[in-house]
Length: 171
Ligand code: S3P
Image (cartoon, rainbow, N blue to C red):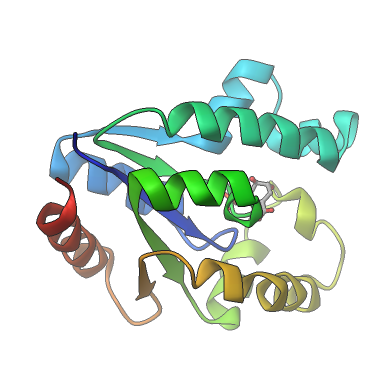
């Protein structure tokens, strides 16, 4: 049974974009957990945070992520916080090849500043907030099978590197 390819990492690092391109290159199905949640709930992620609260969002995220992890040979972009959940993480580590897309704080700040769709960053000091989230999460992201430092790499190089590793290990 072929393993899934899972992307984790900070909000805004590029999991959705890289995941979509990887799926095209590898000719696999692509699932973006946040997009699936938005479709199923009929609400944007930030609206789910606003109307139902973060705890409810995390419960929905957990259910959706665990269900998707039942698949085989799929590319899955997790939400940035999903890998912090022990059950999601254990399932990923058991059934998939996982990649931590990492980037410097400055790159993350630049990306996040150009978007208003991330409810965890809707306060004024995006840099401070991102730095706190990164510090809290980095030791957990580190548990992913592979770490890709995306800062100085083009999308093409990132995709080539990940697909090469995946093809060598997916069976
Ligand atoms: C979150 C990241 C978001 C989304 C939600 C919470 C997080 O996904 O799931 O806003 O906790 O890091 P992206 O990583 O796709 O932005």
